[in-house]
Image 1 (cartoon, rainbow, N blue to C red):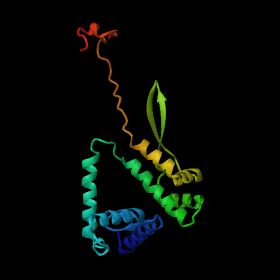
Image 2: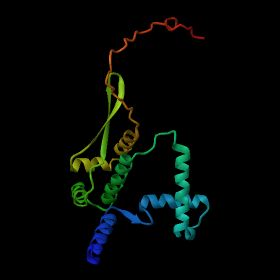
Image 3: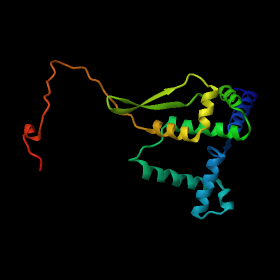
Image 4: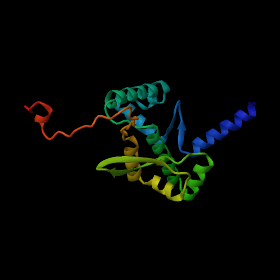
Length: 193
């Protein structure tokens, strides 16, 4: 790859990030996340000058990561699909605040190669609530409009973070043992205490 190809690629990436509302640090964050990071830093006792140093911001991010793992190992965690949904939502909100229409934002997302985020819906099957996840084939003005709605995005985020129960179907080998339904504890051979 030549130097001119590298420069073109770098301009492409820079323009994509800039028009998506991302601000480049060591990681790529949007301005809202940087503001929240600064708020966390101020609450930890850093001043504005100290927050301008990458080492201090890195320390705050490290602490946030540690707290995330300490507090959420047993809880439902965000999935890559849920995080991507939030990322695209922030891009759509940024472009809305900049005065772009839904149609213009749709074209922008298509042009820069953003895939539509995964969606989910809750349904009931045999009395059990389940989540069906799916991805749209392409962008539409309606899908961009939905991504502007905070309530819709939060509901989708929660559904995408929901753990799915795995059902493993095994092939029966030989004759299956017929299970009988027990009517009471006595049928099991013990009594409840």
